[in-house]
Length: 521
Image 1: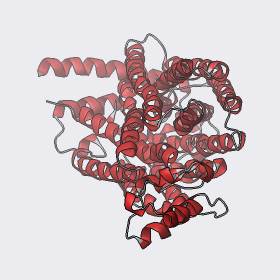
Image 2: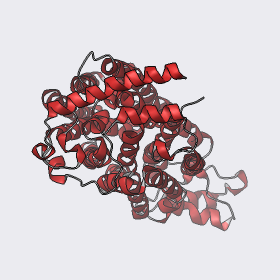
Image 3: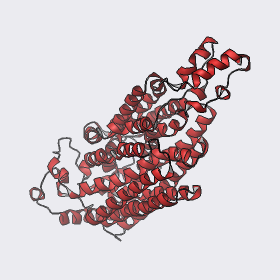
Image 4: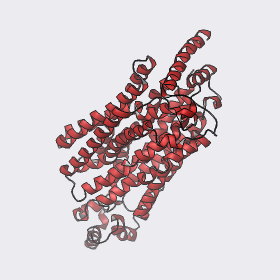
């Protein structure tokens, strides 16, 4: 019989694929949406029917297309010619005059609001459940995808508003899922389960090449429609298979339910009225170390995720399909490395080879330091196409160990408030999404050269090295005394060492109980 935790992993995995399709579909479509300078168009680019190629129509078409003084889209510039002949505007002419700064605004607008709902996501999931919060945040964002093409043609600001709305909604999802992870997953299985979050990596890896093919054979408009359709199908599966707690699940086996409940012990309290120790959370060193660890990973992944298609297209002059393949390939490696390292991390914990804190430090160190070295190498040797894709692939691969680092540590230190802690980390950790995009826009404005991109990669390397070093020096993943809702350890009557001992005792008892259950069955 398939365990409910296994089913949950797969549905969550696909959910995060959807979550990142929403996030990154504009990153690949913008490569085809933005028009080249009008002066580079010729009559051949109009692709008019042969019967219309009269001297008058050619003159009229040329004058409209190369009229650079009008701050409107190519579609508007040639619409008169097509409307008069009852023709629809070809898909390859539905493009826009957005400069580097405007493109940076379009790519970064998603993250302007993404951080706002991170903490509310943790709070709402505690009150209403992850099933409702995660499910609706994903599916409504997918439905907005249907409107994005219309927003683009309506007004540039309409596109920004649509993307900001998507960012606002998807900001609820990650902290909400941490709340469910804390209730469903035993401590020594968390590293493996949290690899489901890296459905986002597979979403990236699949989206770039597949969407590139969709753009090549159909239109960039269909990228947004496909995202909406797939997301809606996933939502129906989510409603059927997922429940907020093991006790609520109608199809869970008695053996699995006992295993989960005994493994979690007293670390999880189900009462909605559990007092949130806000002061203790905001003054907690472990919380802020997780913030720093997530900031580093977010800066790296958002920079590469958002900018790679543009970088490969402009600097290495790859076509849309090659851009899609090489932008997505590194994220497949990231997923495999994340899963492999999570098994290793859980092995270390299960067999008491390393403390929980040292396992999280090891994971974060690998996520940051080798990643920084690869980004620095890219800055100096990235003019070579082969070296460029090699260094980017290795950098993103090392990023995969982050699932066993800060993402797992957020649940370790306070399972009762994992959603809120994830919200705090996500609030600050999502800011690199628009800060990095803004910096790239400024650095490369009217300066699309490798020298300009070198500065982008060196900044990323510096952020990774600094944050990784701080995490290695000061992080702590032990269960915190304020997990029971009190703000001071003195009030709890326990110290950190007492909680570590209690957790170790619980794990030992769980192992014995599992063996006993196995014998009885």
